Length: 68
Image 1 (cartoon, rainbow, N blue to C red):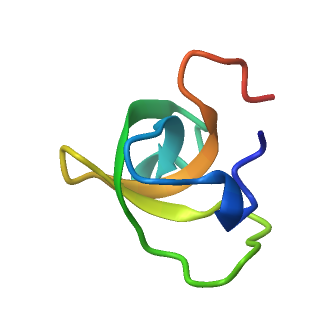
Image 2 (cartoon, rainbow, N blue to C red; image 1 turned 60 degrees about the vertical axis):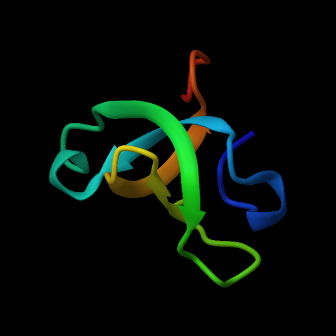
């Protein structure tokens, strides 16, 4: 999963996201999806989500998997 298709993302899914402040370094943050913020069905840089801990970023893949 690349995180670019909204249909692949749902509440409760464990994902790896890149936060705005980490976009240059590519550092990933893992968490559980609380809200899906992107309304478009596809987004080239990843679907934007809010994690249960309140952090917001774009999905790069599933948590615990290589996202390259």
